[in-house]
Image (cartoon, rainbow, N blue to C red; front, side, top):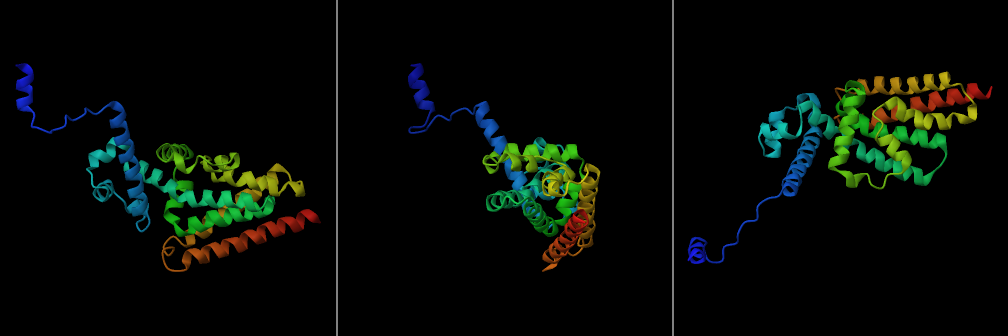
Length: 243
């Protein structure tokens, strides 16, 4: 009788819905978090980070602000994590570069060219990552991004891992600067000074383009100017060291 009663309550051909498991819920949460990162990154392509709000991100992602806060502690946290995606092309370029040449000076110059190409095209995002956010905050953002998109980084070499997971631009630059300065037998203090000059020159020039970098040709112009400056800096070091 009980069986017959149950059959009468369930329409013919209806499938019993499987209850969601903790694994299912974790997958859904992971997918939504990744979707929020992608959406925010897309918005940043034509909107400065400081002009983005939780409401704008939630609307673009098709969810509520509460859903955003379930995954990220603040708009700043989400925006910083999304900005890490701007480093993807830089890491891909680095991978190709290491296959082409093992000359330290060429690697150093080309790493700056790749970094500069992305930075001058996305001035606000790079200013936020490397000059406004604390190293701790950027480090957390990098690891959060990696956890959501691990497939992007599984084939990284040891050197690429050091570059990608370094939240300090000074440390990133010293990785190749130390190698290309070895032949000149310069002191650590001198190399540190060269490092500071390269980074401060880059930041200062990048800030010149803060209001115009989205205009046609401006990002390319900034990169060309910096590479000329870098060539002069390293050329001067080479000349002085060989005297």
